[in-house]
Length: 317
Ligand SMILES: [Zn+2]
Image (cartoon, rainbow, N blue to C red; front, side, top):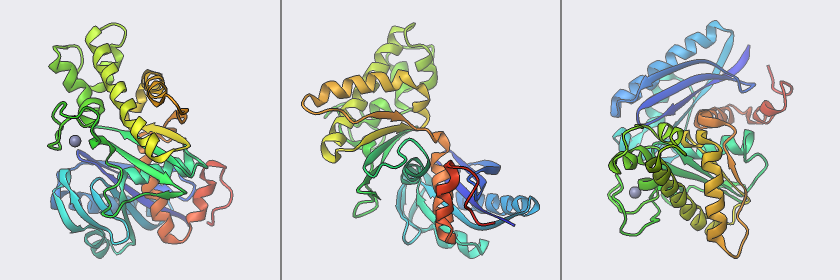
């Protein structure tokens, strides 16, 4: 039987789960709305149960599950100290899943898991010092330094979206002002476009589709990419990364994102070279693949993940 894990990425609005085999291939997939609290736990349990049955029918032996979530996540205990969008506070997520599922479960942080996937399989492959800036509805970073993903004293490292880029600036949903996220997140771009009187777009993707044809879209996008460069300037001065990877839904804008951020960052850094900026190569599934990598690590076959990019050899059947 081929070994497999179930990888679950819990987001603020959607839970995405997939069976990932020991070649790194995503097999069956499921999605459910993320309603928060106990409802999200129940949804995760039922998705894992359903996928486990599908996997067995396909001849796959599910060895573990990997679950990643936003918030203050202690991967060593599987507890969530706080996750605002999910309504969890000091919650034993691993216990809540393992007890009923009777399956080993790893619990990790969604963006750090995405960083792990980029480091092992993607744009940061081989780098031991890099920053992944995940640009989704909100913004967070995975920071790897000296080959170690930084978690901080309270599992709260990487909240790059709430670094101030304009002190006293616009309100951020977090309660502070002038945060990077208030200008450059996937939710901020269309909100700021509409607030400026724009009517042609209601998502960040639609705003970028208007670039070059709509002056308001151009202005809001320039403000977003400038704010990102301010944030990356600070991260670069602090961490001296070998490279910076831009991921999340906003990275689908491609060169429209990469070029202006890169140019503005080089200008801001003045006396030092900017680290190379790259787009995520794992894409929006990075968190889920990171969850799969963490689950395989539980099963003792972590090494087979190294084979995922180099072909189908090496993993035990
Ligand atoms: Zn904030």
